[in-house]
Structure formats: C-alpha cells, structure tokens
Amino acid sequence: MTGGATGRTDRIAGGVLVALGIGIALEASTFEVAFLTDPVGPKALPLLAAVIFVASGAILLARPGSPRTWPRGAVLLRMAGAVATFGAYAAILAPLGFTVATTVAVGSLSLLFGGPWKRGILAALILSVVLWYLFVWVLGLPLPLGSVWEAL
Image 1 (tube, one colour):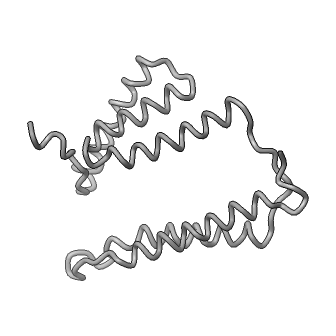
Image 2 (cartoon, helix red, strand yellow; image 1 turned 90 degrees about the vertical axis):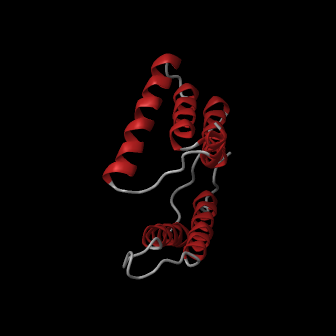
C-alpha cells in the first residue's frame, strides 16, 4: 500500500500533528500556577511542544513528500506493540509509580525489539532508577510513587 502520488500519507500525518498540537495547547492553557513560584510556569514545555507539532504538521500539509510504502508484517506488529506499550505506560504510571512503570515499559520495548530479556530488564531497571534520581534530586521535579504502594 502506498501513500499515492498526492502525498496522502504526509497529509494525514500533518493533519494528525496539527490536531495533536492544538489539543496540547488547549490542555496546557488549563494549567494554573502562581506567578511568584515559577515565572515560566508549567505551560512552557507543553506550549513549546504544541508549536513544534503544529509547525511540523503545517509543513507536511503544505509540502507533502514523495509517496511512502507502509510497513508490513512483523515490522507493523512491532510498531503497534510499541504504541500499545506507551499507552499502557500512561495507564500504569500513576498506580505503579515512575520506577516500576518505566521498568516495565522499557523492558517490554527491549523484548519487543529482540533484546535479551535478562539484560533488557536489568537495563530498564537501571535506567528507571537513574532517571528517578535525575528528575527528583537533580531537577527537583516530583514523580509519582504509585498509589498501589500507599496501602503497604
């Protein structure tokens, strides 16, 4: 299946990027914080992402590239598995906490793309712990501990 001579694939991707960018901007506009605590506030990063999404999407809509061939078979299944993993990560982040959810997600991606399971899980755990310390101790950004662990 190809994108067609008209660049349909790029136009679809561009439309999705524009829609996501607008959605991100609308959601970021609901964030509120006192000016004195943080002059930039929590809106800065999502708004920057929204601008990048909309600009990239607009470029794809205005100047689509040459026709593309969509992946098939195992490659398409791995891509779908990766998308499902990120969706599951968003769902388990709050209840399981950052470290457990990140370990599960990165370990799953490692296995999905053919990595050895023992080293993949170990690397995922190390990455999760390093990222936890980076965000919490170095950057001072709180990460979810997990509501499941509150009962223990």
